[in-house]
Image (cartoon, rainbow, N blue to C red):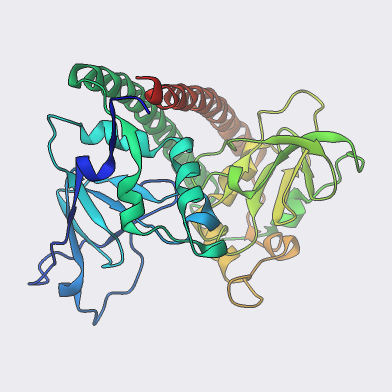
Amino acid sequence: MKSNYKALSELIEKVDERNADGAITELIGVSIDKCFIKSVANTNGTDLSKYKIIRKNEFAVSLMQVSRDSKIPIARLEDYDVAIMSPAYPIFRVKDTSVVLPEYLEMWFKRPEFDREAAFIAVGGVRGSMPWEEFAKMKLPVPPMDKQKNIVKAYKTITDRIALKQKINDNLEATAQAYFDNLFFSCDDTDCTLADIALVNPSRPLSKGVEARCFDMSTLPTSGCIPNGDTTKPYNGGVRFINGDTLIARITPCLENGKAAYINILNEGEVAFGSTEYIVFASKDDIPSCFYYFLIRNSKFVTFALQFMNGSSGRQRVSGEELASFPLMIPSKEKLAAFNKVGKLVLEQMKEATEEIQFLKQFQETITATLSSN
């Protein structure tokens, strides 16, 4: 063990500050993606005085089910000055920021090696949890402060670039969506259904056993249009698709969360496949393919889709036939041509920005991977 390694217990201290007067109502949690998320829990009638307070630059961690998830949900608070969390979360802070920077510590927690070590330590079987005492024993290298600052600065430069590109993507899509909604949904009149103007789950040539790219449910974004990540493996069933196809998840909670994608990242003539829980929409009668992606992001379509969810609790889904019954006006050639100029360009620009984001994230991973050598 290198001499600059220190146990977490030397660097951090637990915080147990309670919301005694109930004054703080911003309730958050930590996701498995190591970021804070707003809680959707109904807190009406809940005694918030028992909840823990977390302040800016403090950390929260979930040490439950570490073995099962092979990941520790852990994050540093940046977006709020103060919030509250469930009493189940251990909250901690850096003891001395002249010894270790909170930002540097956060980078260490994001390393895959950190998660693997934690999963190995965790006890309790498949749903193994990690006692706080074991978590506090984990060690990490603590380089001199000037080196920490340089590492954090490099990482933050990339993070800021990613945020900028993501904001550009979000603005592009929002602008195109507003234009789409105004063109095609400015009135409530209808004279057709989606089935009349779209191919639903069209047949794509891909034989069993043929190696192809697979995009599973985790690759579909909840905002934006480009799936992130894929594997190549023999086709053994699932929905097949090509460039220009629009995918939408049909199962809860993926549909509610907005998991969908526009496919424009395959090679010419390439057929890929994915989950059986996808519905595919493709062009019919020369309607531009971009039309269908912005259609499934339209709020009226989303509301329509959700009313058809059926099945047992937690496994509800909607069928392609039900989604294809969505009523709308047959789009005119003039409006389609006008929107295609915008939608096609926006989707291409979003693709380019997303590719850069993915490259930058790989660069971030490279930086965090080298921390143990510092």
